[in-house]
Amino acid sequence: MAKQEDKFKRVISHAKEYGYVFQSSEIYDGLSAVYDYAQNGVALKKNIREYWWKAMVQLNENIVGLDSAIFMHPTTWKASGHVDAFSDPLIDNKDSKKRYRADVLVEDYVAKLDNKIEKEVKKAAKRFGDAFNKDEFLATNQRVLGYKEKGDAILKRLGQSLEKEDLADVKALIEELEIACPLSGSKNWTDVKQFNLMFGTKLGASAENTMDLYLRPETAQGIFVNFLNVQKTGRMKIPFGIAQTGKAFRNEIVARQFIFRMREFEQMEMQFFIKPGTQLDWFKHWKETRMKWHLSLGMGQDNYRFHDHEKLAHYADAATDIEFRFPFGFKELEGIHSRTDFDLKAHEEHSGKKLQFFDHEDNKSYVPYVLETSIGLDRMFLAVFSNALQEEELENGSTRTVLKLPAVLAPIKAAILPLVKKDGLPEVARKIMDDLKWDFEVTYDEKDAVGRRYRRQDANGTPFCITVDHDTLDDNSVTIRHRDTMEQQRVKISELKEIISKEVSMKSWLMKM
Ligand code: ATP
Image (cartoon, rainbow, N blue to C red; front, top):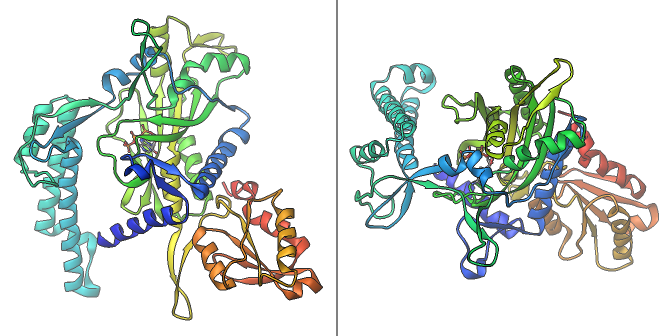
């Protein structure tokens, strides 16, 4: 556990030190759960967005893009269910005045039971040595079974109480488990209340004419309300999809874990409109397709898993999460939901306008079903960044910090380094840079010994360093060093473009899908 926390702390400080992510308004002591993307962060984020956009829109004839406004007519959120049902159960501790998500307090309690199980396993593994059989131990050890049974019973009761909106029982559960405020240690709790996660704001200047609005909590609704506009003007035939990326806002109660859970974040969503009855086939299709997209980045199959939902949202008839192994464990990265005709029907009812598709083959109109893929851009950023950050022991006994970002996503593709700051080497290096900059993000660095410059670029995630030395002046060749292997190759300046391109072009990465 401590190791995981250390790793996570390193991720956060590295992101700051190398100009990836800053706390928002830091000079005013920051704003909780709001972050700014710095010079490298913005480029990594842009590259992830583009990698998604190409895979979803450019490569699919029947998926088109959209950029709908953040402000939407307030009835949108009534129709979508967000006004009535987009809330978390919260509880306050009367002594520390800290607010918590009641369900998270209970889940944290169960996580502690899981930790106890892990400790038992470790102890037993030590005691039995090679003869230890973990599965058998988990299935038979009385203490482990006791913890497991207790945890399952607690989660079951929590789930049932939340489903029935029995908030008094959620509080009773917290009291029965004697859960204390992590800050004050006090068990002096308020009642549990529902707290809507949408941020409200106002449109208009005069008091009589203002309109209460919400900042959108998801980008999906902008797609639904434009369904017919896009279908008609684009002469789209079902099945077809509409994709968009953009900001969403949620007043998260428990906003921690860096950019994993933010109050202002960016989503990349695609709503795929299909014929009713075909949803389970499309669900399977998009589950596989989205997983292939993730795996194409080469971040390790073991770091992903599906988590199929048993308890479904009010609008869904099948749902799964793609979970990623973050530094704090497996957590949701992307959701794939079969949303049925819930949203389009709700917007039909609230707007009085038909949102239907006329199917020439069947000679009838229907409200399409929807299959959604929804991924948080910031979460994807955290997945990529945290997985890339590594401390490596080198053969000479020293260590290096290296950010092994997939080359296709790296903010800077190559650094051009003159070996020394004289003898005409900077001029040649600048010329190479001026040539490459038309095709790639490149940087120039002449400060410090070349070894230190290599380390700096390693920590920054730059896949290639190109060193210009005295021989370059005679043979038009340079040394190209690969970040991950540290291998160095002597190549002609004229070959650089092709070498870099092969490793960083979106085409070659996406073709692995
Ligand atoms: P969670 O259970 O973690 O709160 P969710 O199930 O509410 O997430 P969705 O509504 O399905 O999330 O949103 C789709 C995606 O948007 C999520 O898979 C996640 O990647 C991202 N996302 C949701 N909430 C946040 C947030 N507060 N900060 C950053 N990303 C988020």
